Length: 117
Length: 108
Image (cartoon, rainbow over all chains, first blue to last red; front, side, top):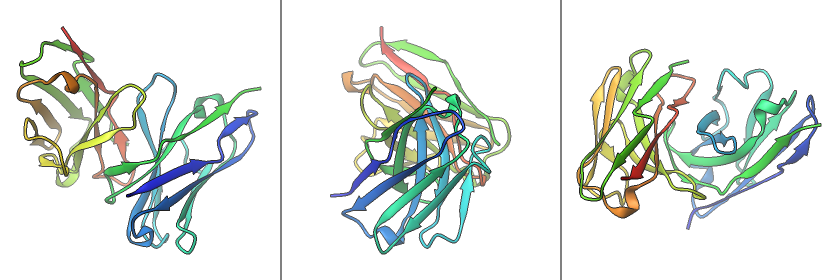
């Protein structure tokens, strides 16, 4: 069974940083693209970033470009999202997901990031 | 970034009726790289359709997708009680992927 378990969320002050992790199991992690998608409370889905299977190709939403960095460790079956210069607009549940290069067919349960003073 | 506009914002229908949800892109979506998701309250999104018209594994055939270029449609042929949810379209034809704002399908 595919499992994606996010961690690292919490309360952070504006301008601060946070690193999210996503532990993957139940599938061949190193063979799959991975994505981060976020959802503010009561709002819609917003795609954040993706990374290819070997970590050599990444893309970002305009809203996070230059502030967020996606990475992966295939030896540890773990996906990461380093988030810097956080603002209140980054407050959301962050999901990691796997699928093709674009669409996502397995999702984690998410980790909540709250940016507030 | 490609902007996806979904309509209507809310659709009120009864079980057994046909639902037609629209997704319009601000520019052409390459290779019809358009997906549809269903999300119920408190749950994670569920992939329904990818490549504009291919059903994901385990998705009932009452769900169908169509369209190309800038106009895409998700059709639910006969609504079941469990189909009432929020639906999102997503384009992945450009380097920066985007979602639509969602259509809420509610029971009339």
